[in-house]
Amino acid sequence: MTHAFFQPPQGGTYALRHVRAPRCLIDDPSADRLAPAGDGDLVALDLAIDAGRIAAIAPAGSLAPERGPHLDDSLALPCFVDLHTHLDKGHIWPRKANPSGDGAGASRATMEDRTKNWHAEDVRRRMDFALRTAYAKGVSAIRTHLDSLAPQADISFPVFREMRERWAGRIALQVSSIAPVDIFLGDEGVHLANVVAESGGNLGCVTKSQRHPAEATPPEIDEGIARLLTLATERGLDVDLHVDESTDPRARSLIRIARVAIAQGFKGRILCGHCTALALQTDEFIAETIAACREAGIAIVSLPTVNMYLQDRSVDATRTPRWRGVTVLHELKAAGVPVAVAGDNCRDPFYAYGDHDMLDTYTQAVKILHLDHPFSDWIRAASATPAQIMGLDGFGLLRVGNPADLTVLRARSYSELLARAPFDRAVIRAGRAIDTTLPDYRELDDLVMLR
Image 1 (tube, rainbow, N blue to C red):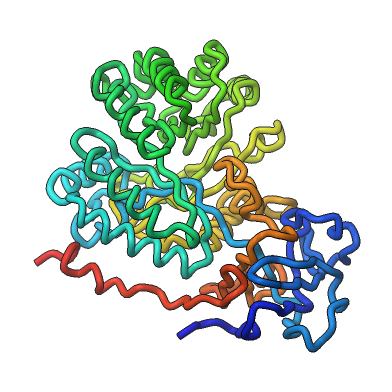
Image 2 (cartoon, rainbow, N blue to C red):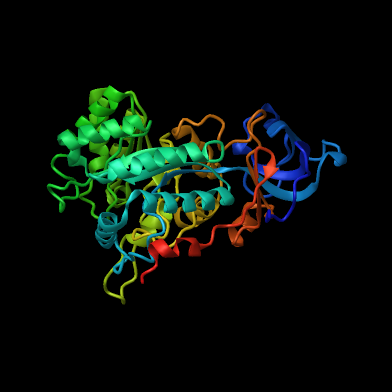
């Protein structure tokens, strides 16, 4: 059964008439002819669909009524793109909660559960559950990080390759490794780089060290990153890093990464996630770091829901957190650094909540990061920009010739979209409405429920 507030016409040729979309997501010369509508940069349009693709983008009301339904100014958005997730961790919360709710507790709980339970079938079933959820929510592409300390890489990467093939044509899947930076100083790092290359992935690490776990910026950061970039260059890999996910202003790895990349002349893409400690630096150091990132060609992804959950949490129940746990996204964007927001963790020790819903991630990011007044083109941070960072041409955009992969919302404006949840939506993939029934958590009971 397909659950949606409207049903697209049967057959492969029809029109969605009188809809609205952000001008910043329309990659078509017709965008200049579309009339403003509603708040932000919304414009009024008709979309013609033929053989599963967008056939035309026209001013609202210009397509004949018999071609399709009048949608009363509903929002029609390209499907969203989730640039940073952890599909291998997802949904273990019932089995392994985080009693402290902070990053240290999350790391301990995850390590214990990974060591005990992350066999191939466990990872496969939880990953499939997550992908079915994201698909029903209207997500068209995902990049997942996989915990990669031995022996887990040799378990999880083959499962990922299987899932990527199984989901081809529905969700475009990419993968990155995650392990402490110092493993790249030894043979384990070489082996991991080979596994990542075999999987067509991105080489990644976290700017934490096994050798110096208490150091906010580990002493081997420069050497470790240099070695990682060399391994990536030798294998033609891009790089995706977890950086300075900390409330400690001494965490200053981001600028070091940029400088090492510049010194090496690294030619691949570099994405740095989290970077929350940057918001705790002086304005002068922030500006210096942003300039280095711009020169190195680094893109930044913020994970607002997860980091607000984890960071500045106190064991003292009488203390309120003092900051939002997000990086300086406005300053980065203003300087020309590509920026995105992403979903990160779902129902695991790093985040007790979440549902693989990038529409929800975007609306929460608006409120957490003040991506409003004006809305500007910030919605690109959950759609077109992550697609560009992932090298996925046309994803996250409304473009003639693109697959008709759309999320159509009952909401008519940013105000209505941000005010009311859950979101009343229809998801269209290749021109046809899909079943948006969500998988039941009970499916995983035999894996994750404590007995």
